[in-house]
Image (tube, rainbow over all chains, first blue to last red; front, side, top):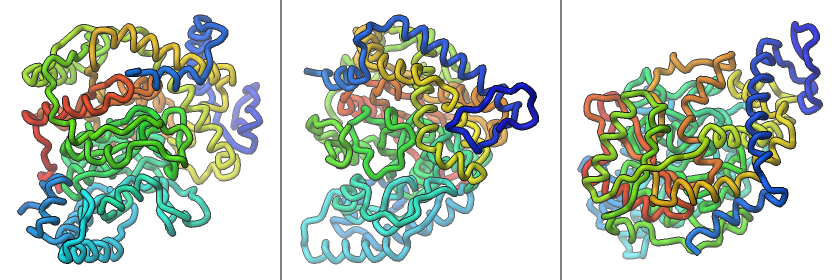
Length: 64
Length: 466
């Protein structure tokens, strides 16, 4: 639940039973939005075939 | 013989040649541990009886002419996040596992097999989730050079005890700077290995995509010895690399002439002027040792930080979700507040951060490391703050304040690259340090650079306050 707020956004199911004061939520949401902007910008540059396994492949290819 | 100033290698030699007994060394370390803890809040639990019993066994083995390991009789102490048979690690928190561990963390087992003796489990930020040494559950740790200053975190106790001469070396972990920041704050060295170089099995997870375990020491040669012991594939950690482990100590005196060190002036320009000046001084020392300065540029450092944050916040949110929902009041205010963020990050952003990692690393290796061997960066962006200045709890300044502390460290975790922290020449300043960031699995060459640096700037003990 969200404390002492009106029309505050609903918390995700994963936080059910946890309490977030509205003033903290007012910090969390813009911050997450900022991270999301970067993720979208980076995502727009990725080829479709980009894969999480690329990371270990690049690390391990060093020096080969 | 001033035991507190000796490196692990020197202590092992003195014990092996019976210039001093392991019992004497361990007792001296235990005495010092108590004194340092009273001032710095560096210790969670002490293993007095077990340590002295182990020291007696080592002394007896040496007296009988038995072959002993390279750390025989040397006292060490580690961050309280590693499994130990029959014990429950605190994780710096109220929430802990319910039953004692069945077996030792494999790294502790390897150090024990080498003859080292663990004398204590050390202070850490709650769940290793904080870069300053503040801990609202077990109390804030204090810097042995200046008790009003932060010791850095999350491996706070490890850096404090090494800096104060309690032990010559200690293990810690690094998810966003947690080996490098305390090492810099306490004027000692640390090595965050390449991601996957050292097993994380039996170590408390924070963000598995970023977590690394590594050593803190005063002498780079001790980092090399410990890396030789702990690096390498571990069947208990499927992500650990199968690459052969170099003889880091054997390679530490390799020449560093001509090694190209990249300097990103624009990125360094975001640091406080005093930090920029001290970094320039350190670079000049490296040049005198034979390194060559080249200009480099990291493209979009801020994006690397954001990608790292997305991984860290989402993985922490997932791991701690069950506890946060049921035992939220058992968390300290800062960790509780930080754990909430990841629940609001879209799953697609998390997957993007994972998918982009290889592409971005490849680009950094080509563009930034294309004409250099390693890169020099500050560890802290600012002179060392006081504990009060950064006592932001879970308040609205939390992310901005901690983000500034981690400015130069977390992106390195996203890239998975190794980073060696070395202290600036202290002169009249407070302790602080810089990092040498290397290419994947280039730890041996980085340690050689560190060794060359320490010939001019040797490690020292924080003896003024402790």
